[in-house]
Amino acid sequence: MAYRGGSALAGLLSILSALGRVTYRNLRKLGSLAGNNFFLFVFLLLGQSGGFLQVVLGLLLLFPFSSDPLRSIPSERLQQWPLTPRIALALRLASVWFSPVAWITVGLIIWTKSLQFAAAFVGISALFYALSSLFTWVPARAPRLNILAHVPDFGGPIGGLVRKNARELLSILDPYAGLVLTLSATVYRFASSKPEPDAFMILSMLVALTLSTYALCLFGLDTASGFARYHLFPLRGWQILLAKDVAFLAVLLILVAPLHLLAGLAAGLMALTVGHHASVRYRVPQTHWRFTGGAPLTSGLLQAFLMFSAGTLVARTSAWVLLPCVAMFAGSLWYFGKELDRSAE
Amino acid sequence: MEVETGAICAFLGPNGAGKSTTVKMLTGLLKPTSGDALVAGHNVASEPLAVKRIIGVLPENLGLFDALTVEEHLYLSGPIYSLSRAETRSRTDQLLRALALENGRSTFIEHCSYGMRKKTALAMALLHNPRVLFLDEPFEGIDPVTSKTLRGLLTKVAARGVTVFLTSHILPIVERLATQIVMIREGRAVWNSRPDELPKSLEDVYFDLVEWPIEEDLPWLGCSPS
Image 1 (cartoon, one colour):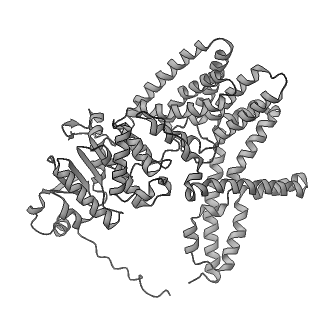
Image 2 (tube, rainbow over the protein chains, first blue to last red; image 1 turned 45 degrees about the vertical axis):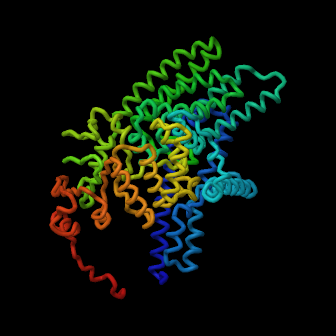
Image 3 (cartoon, each protein chain N blue to C red; image 1 turned 180 degrees about the vertical axis):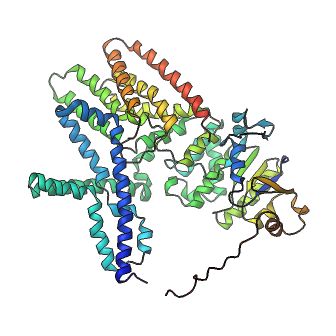
């Protein structure tokens, strides 16, 4: 039994209205990037001089922008609805306009009056869409090709939890923004005849900054089911937090190793020291293959200040400066671990 | 209310009666607002870690991580309960075989069926050989073969002294398996006995004491659309 006449149009409008709501919610999630330290830094502090970083971020943003709006409806549900071929086609055509890419393309045509430029943008978006589809398609159908499946067990009582947390961290876009910076800096190190030594210290802290917002939302990718399991394990709160921290520091240290390891480590420890508070108290939910966002702005500013101070001190004075950083980190781990223990429903 | 060592206690009641809430309080997921509860002699409020070390739990929401495969859940769990790597691997292999999970052992939880997820959570509850098992609706959503395997398993471990506390809505299974039946209504126990002390079938007692089925006619259902 297929919809006919007026009821067909009503059915189409009902689906489009649901699609509109989903798109609006997704765009609001993108709006939460205002709470991402790295985005704030690039757009507020660097201004015009941050052209390179803005291009990097613009390209990475194309992942969430390029998703097909119709994919937010489960395919089984879509196939079950009694839609005539004409209505299905109308739905396909109308849903295109729920994609931010369509609006950006129109904007580009009006702004540049260049069809070729707009077509190139659509081409890049299609490429990013294909890549992001691969990210979801490959793990489901070819588990061996899933890169995240190869993250090793870290050993010890909480080693399995560290592996899980590392996988979660690698399923958001923040570390990939850091990776682009690390790769660019590495190319600069080898391509430049006389590279500026301070540049690597600053870049190391910038890489730490790309990950720092995640340190404010360490439980953001845990489902209610997973979070309940933490409270069933015979583990103390600080051990659960430490498993998050080890995963964070492992990814960060790999990224800053070619730059300035100690400055990156000091910045990372400060990011976690401040981050425990918001992570345990607010548990801001995050989405896979998106940038982290929605974290408290004051915590982000404090984080950025302490990260740059500690990183610069360690790089300019002595590695012993790491000791107070470790002490502050341990104090925060102990205090908010206790708070996590008390946070059973 | 008391449950003896080695008993299989079925905790029955309608949706929203407080079964899962009770399980949550006994397993440390929820803090009791008043009263005392002891599990194997340990107070759940003041000794939560001691309780967690000796219990195995199948929670209502299963407690699984999307970022891990079926077998990785067990590899993660073993060392947390102080099992060696070799022992964890050996027990994992046996549990995955017993619960017919071997073929899907490398599948990420987010790609598993509900039945597979439930069996994974069950395997996690059993892996560390707990003294008390809390199972929230263990028979719902699993296939008949696994259901039979699980019943056999629970009977065996109870005979070896493990106490089982389970909730379920499948009364025929409960009637065959349980050695103690407790029924609750609106948060209060209205029946507590051995199954052979029931005056009628479990279903009839349940309908009498807990909830009578509502017979509502839906006249529009099955009629041709106007």
